[in-house]
Image (cartoon, rainbow, N blue to C red; front, side, top):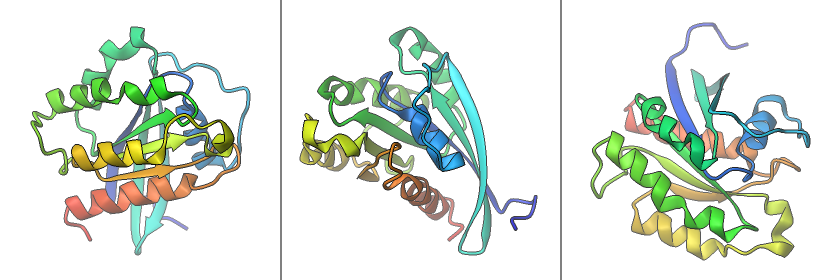
Length: 183
């Protein structure tokens, strides 16, 4: 049982192009289920999850941003105060990966980050790993961006079969705890 008191509360933003599986990832993480009828996010959806890491009660506030360009103007006002980010792309759609610099620039402007984003953890997530046979983004491309931009990590997942979904949230939470000097 997790107490109502949290040792740490973190706000994380999930961002990326529309249709890459952001909402499916969050819903799979929260419920353990895959919902094929997920519809397009309009603006923003917020969720909360409580769990334990190393005997610490953690609350994650998960902000799922719409990926459509017409909603992008909302992102700067909503990411203020966030502790980390998950950039998600579809491994079968190279264009969804190619737009990462545009998304990252929004974070750099808000947090006045010039070259070092290591104090603001961002995990790059290649979604739809269950469709590996139709992959168009090689893992090396994402790993190169992680290295070149000093980001935290690259991971792949499948919201459909659940592979690596929970690990993504555990990894970013552990890193945020480390940056906050809690662990």
